Length: 374
Image (tube, rainbow, N blue to C red; front, top):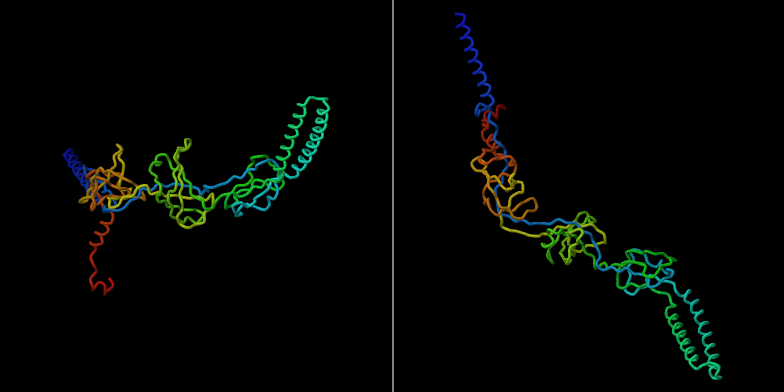
């Protein structure tokens, strides 16, 4: 009897335990295979529409002058009249920038050459008398005359170079650098002064090899200059160099700023080149397209509360948008957030719909309740 009482008590306890567990599971929500059902993924959606998209290449560049003169010394000598110009000065074509002193040294050499010529002339007279007297052969007189002629030519050449050398501006420009000071003694071919033409200022940029064949003359370029608080000016590609830099693997191109702005060599510029533009095409946010582990590009279309995976073909990308060539049509709803871990056919919650639903479900207070303040 006691045995049966023990069995009955055990069955009752087991039944109560099963009932308690089922109540706990039921209080936490619905179950699936005996486990709590996971909540539906929450996604944000957007309606697919036709739009415009640009493929933009972002680069940096520097303002440079294409017309620069590096004026060098034609001969050695001391620098004179150098203090008349400094960096930033504007010079006109033919204006004297500085001089290289030659006259003082040349005068001493001329005096010595005059004395040598006088000696040669006296010797020529003596030889002529000796030839007339028959003391020496006649050919000695010819040699003496040739020597005198050489001395005369040398003296004339020295006279031509006895004046100071003047370094003049080759064209209208601005002095950018002065490498010497008054009194410096310089050797021949030493660079003394640099001049640039302010009308030749361009923005020079280096285009990576991968995009080097995409740039074209006349291509529009948005030019942003840090010197003007990041303001953007219009520009266009005015020159493309024929060769790539073999060390950096870049192709140099020049941009002419078409908007009126005062440029200074060395200014930093940020450039945006529109390589390609498409209009009336399917455009979605870049976040809507994800890459699978196998390398496929997919997007999720939301239909009847479920997410369906679509393989898509993409085109150009830019400005946070991407062009869809195939796989999605205008008017469809796609997931643009919360789509990273979605699976094909899974049920989802669309952000915003639950809130709207709960607001609709709230009963409106009656006029009596409003009046009583309840």
